Length: 232
Image (tube, rainbow, N blue to C red; front, side, top):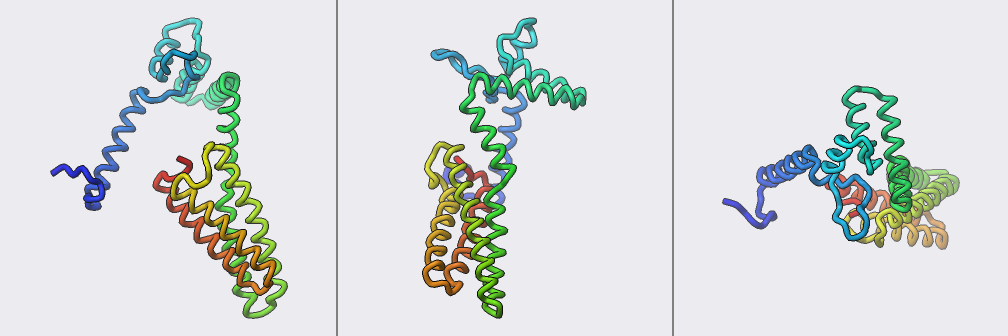
């Protein structure tokens, strides 16, 4: 029987539904029906899918859409395994995109850099390193190890803040739009409060809380992002 409430699905039915959704998406992408990779049409005109733009470009000796021509070149050079020509077509598409939509292109490049740097993974490494240093410091050499741990947490705080600001700029939304972004924001707030307590009491407890809770919150955010819960 068909169940309208997805919460009633067992594991097999849930995975089967996910497979159906992915197959549907694969078919749509193969038919180029829902790929709006061309620049927006003039005001008042409907958006044109990539499929129509490629057909018009392929049958015209003077294409009016440079992006469509670049995508067609990418497909052809990829099929021919011509890496140099493919890279040239990608560059041409990027240039056309920047000319038509400079602000969106800037956000795209920012997001690409953000994904390359992966700031929150760096924060996870710094937080867990700081926590281990503090734990070892409680056994001996507490003052120097606590200072090193606090320095690592402060570096993580700078990266964490910059990553949070970048997410807000890229998405154009506040930092609590879904579970993943909320976990990142909560980790940031906990970290700042714990660091403030550590600077007041200087006993290592605040730094340990900042490192451990920051690490756990970002780890939860990372797990949530695997299910597609990212910047939406």
